[in-house]
Length: 102
Image (cartoon, rainbow, N blue to C red; front, side, top):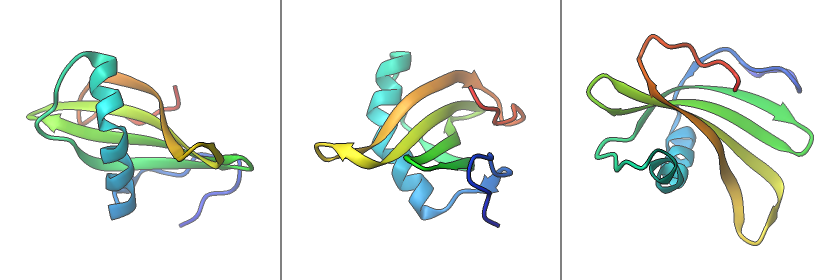
């Protein structure tokens, strides 16, 4: 199900594309919370499409019962070669914490 431009989608199960995006921002997420994660498995996400790019909220399991929420942006016109950027995170989170815009 596609969301309308300017509206967050419902939470959806992760696709290979979303796991790849999560993997790309893992080093930035680890640096932001000053931790190394042995596990970094995306499990759910929401997407928001805007004219300049796509925004993602991604729930990632980082081991055991710990999760991190990532806010990631994929821009259409990127500086250099980086079109995926971590814009924020919320940590620690639980499986039951909803993905809400932050």
